[in-house]
Length: 309
Image (cartoon, rainbow, N blue to C red; front, side, top):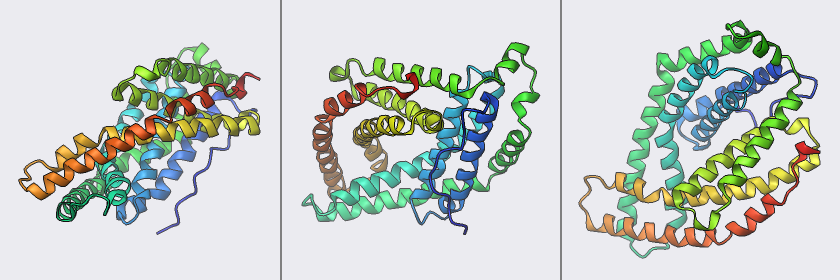
């Protein structure tokens, strides 16, 4: 098994056109995904599925971020295939997080040992089945065809081979830096608007804030090299801090639904008692984490936007 690539940003620069940067970003993330595919298939390291899923999210995000330059009717077919692949990886990733960051962290802290052993065994069994689904996806002709066809599309700049208005085609040959600044400004404005009433937001609304923040995070990853490095690093530090908190809150908020699925058909008092107690344990963590939201939000919202300089 080849060693997976380390996480890095695509090598784009201010001299590139929109079209060139689009191709470089997608190629970079496709190669990153492929380097982690064997790890995800083996299932011995939970980073495998995580990194493959991240790569697909980043590629899907790139398709959206470049939508003003490349019509969605050209990119939507690829986005649909990426969404399908990510959906096949989703259950395994959810259970990886639940077991590694949930059950393992709670181990021994709730005095219901018999229930803990039984409940974790159920979770591990479901995890194994989820990885069977992951391997079936990698073995499928649909996945293999996607990789082959998408690779060829990138190599041949397939978006340029499509029929499109001359104004759209000419825009693809303009500066990526100007385009990136507009995209980043739009995305940060969306985040600020979504989180404006953060004190009264429901779990679902906080989840939407997290999604908007993730879109901004991917955009800053793609375009950081186009702007002042120090300023972008400072902005990303505050954005990542906010995203980390929102991610933890989301993991806790989706836990009851995940637990309900694991307990479907289970009629054992020890298991059910422990499952209920585990939800209560993480609910307490949710309130503690949410208490940090104001501080991290204010730090993020007051940070200068490097692309406006």
